Image (cartoon, rainbow, N blue to C red):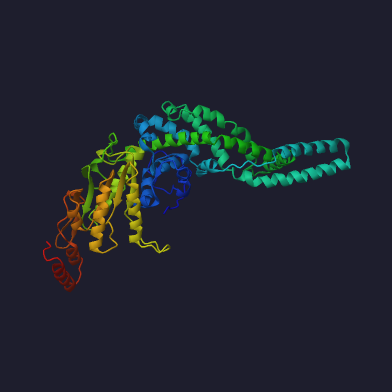
Length: 531
């Protein structure tokens, strides 16, 4: 489902990223790490596809650094409960919004990590770090070679020269056998050093020190990495003649003393014991960048609101709620008390877009403490599940109906976990016949409504609306037809849809008169009392 984009090296200052700037395979690596650890609840790929998550992320992202992008992506895909870190620093976000000088200062501090190479810092957290054996042997061989060379020079002994040659060849083999190990750090080590430097700069800025209490300790823990980088990284990028000669001399010294394998083992031990400190630095920089990104986002929106204090009951309220990705989106109001929402309406009238609008707003309100509305309140924390854009899986031989059956079954299982859930469904059970669809949908939706779950579901079946009018609040979208055109106002209206315009739309679209007449006659035969 994920799209690939190239990322340019650029000092970014809060504008919406309209140029190719996204490489999602790298951006989502921190999320993958957190998911591997089972740290919290994460949006499924299906829910992300239903909510057009990638497009939403690209709209929301105003980060400066690669770690900031990775942190923001994970923040959006995870539900971390009431201790969501973004919520705690609302005052800092407001300060960012108001002080352009602070924005510039933080941007300049973050800019060294804007290179795509900085995505590789996460690889230091995901490595298994199996420490190689042989450190003592390397140390011995790193002493024997120089001793034999010194002896050969002083004594001019043939045996000493022969012994040195043998030791040099052995060291040469060990040196270059270790090279692939160091290649894996060619990108990540310099970026780790930059992360350390950026953290030190950010930590000096008033207001940012409170983001992570353990930063001073972690900075001191990572500083020894600087001592090893020159041996592991030395000589890379040198092209002119003098530099090339210096590189050869340095390479000979490394081979003679086996400094690279010895340093590599020490370095691996160091990283393995300091992974938590590396993540502390990463988390600090990522959070600071994300808070700055939220401030820039808010300043770019036509309007927004900070969500009200989360409710502990199944209630929902939104005033002038809109979809952030739709230009000049029509806003709507909605308030729900202990019920859920059943939507009716014709195709293209706005049902699915409205359901998606609810999901996106609850997601962003919960993760970034920002809602695209004038007023917004919902129960939290709330987990989000959806079944909006299901299709046939030809590879596994699974129809869209069976996909929907499985997705809704998962929702039923999750509805009993004890917390709040948001279930989003479009044209529920549309893949089967009318009578069974209505019967099954009624049974499922009644059970869902009895749990701590907010359900937003659409249907074409007005009969289903009649059967569920006690458990669900009924709303609809509708169109207006004139002689030649269809007009949609995309305004949410109370009650179920009572008009039927499907045949009339065919007539306006120029279908043959014979088909239209036959359709009306058949419709009257099937539903004699229909309006």
